[in-house]
Image (cartoon, rainbow, N blue to C red):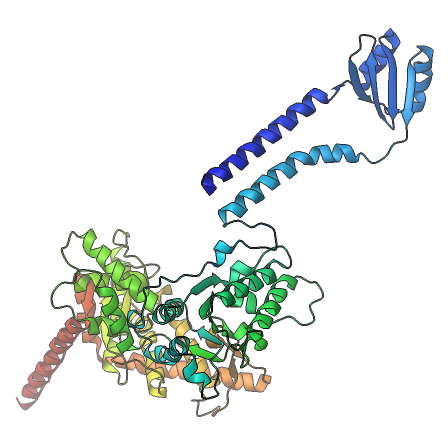
Length: 605
């Protein structure tokens, strides 16, 4: 009989038990009558004896059947009972525990059945402290290899030694060294931490125990610690092996120290058990622990010291070469059209993680299938990329012609500013098709991955953000809310220029902003400073934004015809790519030259 059938049988038996108990209560419970009816029956001589317990009365009729009722004033009723020769017995009133227990029996039955069923669904436990062994069954069939993990070559190189130590442990022990006991894989979500751990197990061909950090956590104190001990007991029996704990921050967070409430007792006991087990390995047992987290900043320092997690490997987002290799791995699973250059796609998706790239390839295949294509084309990748980054295209959105023209000039203002300023990323695409919450977009793609930014690049980035609002003012002489997000981002860049990067000539190289603890760094927060300094900072930030605004307005005003041409191209085509924008620019430049020649001829005449 399967676990599901057993679980259904348990629920059925629980239901039948509740129904049977209710039938029993109904049959065994005496009929309830009102106080008025009770007095009338006494006066008629129908009742021969009663039993008093506080205000509750139980009795029997002359016919033999029983009843119950409630008497609000027993002292006033006693003369009446004596007058009609009713036999009276009584007992001292006490807490009605029996009634309470009777009312709770169905609840206990339902909870018991639910707990048994839920335990069976999770794999079952023989008790709250003892985990069934099938939860910790090792896997020995991992088909993943290092060649299947692309884009993180540095981390992979660091972990090759782990595999070597599992295959040839004597190679290190003969020289007096010891094999690292633990490896912590830390990095953003989707960068391949779990995949890399499976590849290690596949390369080493050893038993692989995989469990999530949350699997140790239970509402019952002591269960997590018991599970840790069970896991390590099983692992020692199958050494050499690998224990992989995913999302270890669920149990490995910093201990609270002065916590008097005891709310974290279970998690801290689990962590203590893990610390003890990691320190308790015998020298002849090769058990390596690999853990993964995207929150290394909250882990307890005792967990990170040498002797426990000896190595901490940071897996970052892949660079352009890494993205290309990841694309090659996933592109083997789909049918690609001829002439697709994966390196161009890799360059167009900066900041994508391995999981996002896998999703991109899958979305592109779905797009091609939706249009009944026989192979995935570059247009499918472009559409999938826009869908992932910006949201679904809202082709059916009803936008009036005025708003459409404002959007076209707004996006043209962004694009022209980016085109004409030095040290900016090339314009990849301009569109006035609504996506997500945005009515249009101007997309720039860097030629290479950037790790540092110059002051000129950041200043020009502010100007590009201001280009949309300024184009609206030049052409329509009014402002709209479409530039609200641009202003927020521009202000943030100017603030970081002054307070974090030390790029202000007035304030100087002083940091008034610091990193807040969070995921591999986290967000920036302001440090305390005086009101006078705050005024200087505010003035400097405003000065930077105002200067960028003034210079961008001059730039777009002097290239007014280019702004009109590009906006008209957007209104006709809705989407203009970088090459098409270059064509519009060449037309604009040639027209300007012709006008100058005609002007010079007129002057000579």
